[in-house]
Image (cartoon, rainbow, N blue to C red; front, side, top):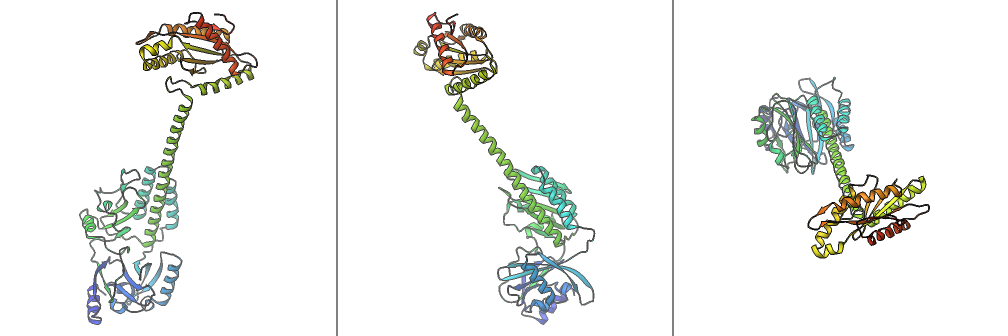
Length: 477
């Protein structure tokens, strides 16, 4: 029966039925019951196209009378186990039969039933395609791959001309990934967190089906897919030649909102099972995106922790003034090298040296210049050492070099090269700076303290010999 005749029949048979200001998309119909399933309180004007009854014949009557007792029982069971809906055959007054998909959800004091035609699509294996695309999305190794897989899935499964992801990612970067189709410009819902999604528009040019209700408060229909988009959104779609649209939210986007927007210039109806599959893919993508974001954040936190630990270790091991090993660290290194030398029978030497006349430098030029001298001396000595050698600040103006693999003669030659290089180095404003070197080589059963003690005695012999020279542990030059 045409919708206009439905309205005329409603007015003539049941004049007390008020027309509400709401309406739904005409490809499906809507029925609302009170939450104890006692009677129909709302029905769309195109009810007869699906069940052969006008709204006037349905309002106030129990759902068994409108849908049939078997259908009501099946719906109640599906609702109790959390199923999204059921498929039933429906016979019309003209003797024809059609497959209908019934979706049920509760809204406070009412139960909303949405009925849509269920097209037969024998070649579409929804569970198999859902598994395939779900695995591709769940295995995406980065967000770019994730978004590309999601858009490809929507383009293939919906058949829409344009599938676009708009919004922002976790880092606040704008998203715009268009898999196929005509361009899209800024979307009004991306800045409006209250916009209703998911949303499906089958045909923006079709005349809506009005809703008729019995007296009393009407149910909240804001979450019903059959409801029409807002006028602002309809105008936006119409201005871009889109008759059909599907808009889904990529959940938990921060700080903004991210939407998948599919559009087509021709009417297009997606059956509820396919829409539920698309929602599952969206949720899978949201979870994967959250996991990838958390993985990225974890790696960032790990790198930050590693950098901080490295800095702490450096602070614990490095003398901040000269940037060589501090006393604690060089003592550890000396003990470790002694153990290696003892185990392998290899030579090991230490060079202990002291900057000559350092106190007058501090007294004359100040401690800042004294600090500069110590830093420059450390750099100059370090340039003569191998990567396997170790230089540390022993205390004040004293330094120590631990030289593995060097016997006493080799260490003596190294010390003289350092001594002469320092004497030739000009450090402003002091000028020439020299150092006195004491050299000692490891002996059987030596401890670190004993080895350093011999080098220290040799260094003091160098001081007594006139400074800027090298002396060995046995008193020889």
